Length: 249
Ligand code: AMP
Image (tube, rainbow, N blue to C red; front, side, top):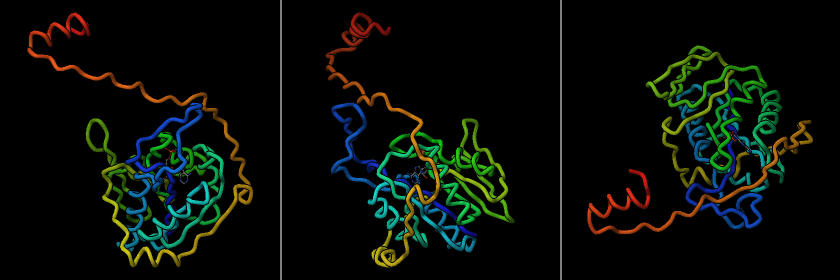
């Protein structure tokens, strides 16, 4: 079974994001970038499937600037077999990503596509769902457990009332949640081996997809700065402030 794992290059989750002065977006120049954390979980899951003899080949795919190849190399060092880079310098929104992934699915015929439940930069939580709709495939979203057997995938999802367990027929789209697994660190020998693994490159035009943006970002604003707190010297003064200044009691 072939597994396709889309991975996005995003600002590293440890970086304090700064909004650009002209409010058109966030600063990414000289900022540490990494694989979207949910995508590390999907790569890990695909590698575990291969180790368990349930998957034969893992293809990591990233859409974006040239440096996405570093993100793909990370996935290759974790255990993916080969990479595909769809090159573009434009910001690509989830619908266009889903259309490009659909074109790759038609080329590669995977039985499973495992995506992150959301990218931590746009927080869209749309790509997997849109890809499933475009392909007409079953989808299991926010998976906290994936069990493959007899051409089906049993997906466990954490919902408000507890655990929901559903079964989807393959081929299918799965999006992964935080508690599915703990991604491994790539070992040095595997980082070296990853350098020799192939990465195919395509342009958006080569895949024949119209990736024009249908969304316009009007403005990106930083959250309001929190005001400094004050120390109160007694419970009575706290109650007084809550009552007469904050007016919350
Ligand atoms: P989103 O719908 O933007 O929150 O992203 C959900 C998931 O779609 C991510 O976790 C990735 O698996 C995949 N994805 C989104 N954008 C890209 C991209 N540019 N390249 C590869 N995969 C992507």
